[in-house]
Length: 209
Image (tube, rainbow, N blue to C red):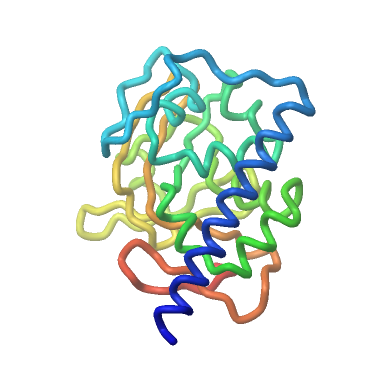
């Protein structure tokens, strides 16, 4: 019985991945957008190449760990923020971070790409170029979405909303990227009741922050 349930859940997760990819492609075709220049290959390692001369979206696009995030950005119609002059600081959730979202949350976000999904993505973007050291000097950090992130640098490890930075200070021409293993959900975005988000440490947090 457990094997059947695991297979069914895996199938559902695959379906969500296919749906978000298909919707993102449709959004790109509808707006006449083209893919960013590049060699068409993804870096499947755990290190993002230096990108001082590349915008945030291209730096993320060259690392295969962020394909779900890139698809979500296209689906929400937020490409301009990640390609514009900025500067912006982006807390980039990995593919695994999106995989940890409960099915009900994924359904909600995909069902409202210009609303809830956009709000969640903008909650991961802060105006300005903030290094990890600079973030550590503050108690909170403003976001483009409007709700601030809580900062903690106790013990020398910087966290935002209790989420640690897996990789920090990845440069881009229009900002800086910090890699995180959890999709952070803003407190003022209503999501399905009774859901919880699993962090990269295996702990759970309330879906509404």
